[in-house]
Image 1 (cartoon, rainbow, N blue to C red):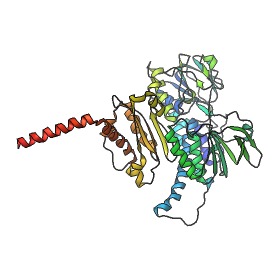
Image 2 (image 1 turned 60 degrees about the vertical axis):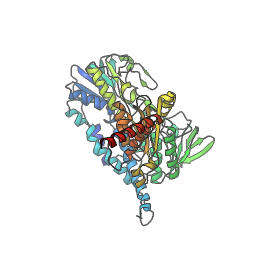
Image 3 (image 1 turned 180 degrees about the vertical axis):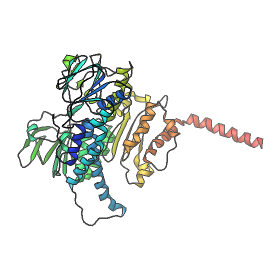
Image 4 (image 1 turned 90 degrees about the vertical axis):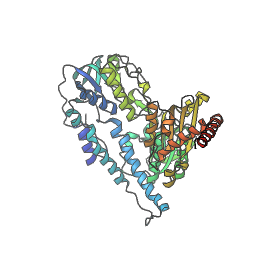
Length: 506
């Protein structure tokens, strides 16, 4: 199978040569492998490298490009694009700090995309066939499938195994909108192949990808229409968080349509269009950022005794499938489709599959972030879950407009919020909306993982000034709440007695 990524330029040619070399010859299989990994995305690569590092005999199967969505069509190219768009935004914003350019400036979008492809290629060696072969892993390029509960096959070669893990991930799917497929919309798998900036871009789906791309292309100069069926963007996030981001997107020029149903799409040749709530909206490109489909086709899961459904493979809390020797990890079996969750799940598989471990995926404390400006980050209990707990939970909120670093950088949009167990003071969840939320949420993730109380955050010394100091503000607010009138009265009596004893002693 030959893999090509467009445009077929130097960077993409080098990328493919690293991740799926055209002249690659699959090795002769060993008599039996300790672990066969099907799918070389983030979960598969971690599982394969981890098992090989422990001395296991490992086979790794990939039908397309090593690195999976994250490297090729997801995190890596999207964050490179976000960085370019953010730089353009900051350059325009510099006028308020006293620096001005002559003229309006021009954008070389082709150069932006070439830079994206270069960065992706520069990082590709980490996921390359050569690197994983050097780790002692047998890499097989081709379509892998099961032929029994203890044997897989790729390109006519049989791979017997003690254990296997399915890490084939998921891909973008098109919603069932009449005419949409014929309109040839972009998805994350084709978006980063663009070489010309769409003058008008229609985005279907206002989740993390849709919002990130809407803001980026708007900053590049596209007229962006962002369409969402729900009554707010980023509907799985804290409602207050989505409101802050929506306000920012609108202020930058993104046209947001909520409670919007797309009933038709078309491609007239000169333009593309969608019908939304009976109104026709024209654009040069349509980006679909709604929905994912698990990559289960061709695996012959029935032969292995592995059950599956429309959202992926069925696993228990230890990531074991319905076939005892076979596990799954990553987007193929998880509702949390993040690179870091795939990484964590792969480590659970290693412990449970190779060492009879009892690790549970439900024990993972999983943070996530959306890299809009401002960023939205979350970990642990959500606002809805906290509300269900009633007065058992204390929720504290601080505005970024009260944080010195945010004021100095004129990045005061947003807030930080923590949910604390009333009885113990233990941190159960947190949300942050700020320019550095993705970095700052890790402090809360550590606190929840370690079972820390919010008083531990209050006792932690932060360098001044940083935006993460907002957590300390919340800890101080919690302390003030704990300082009840009764405690204040006792403390007042104590100080009075202490002062009297000091006078008598002198």
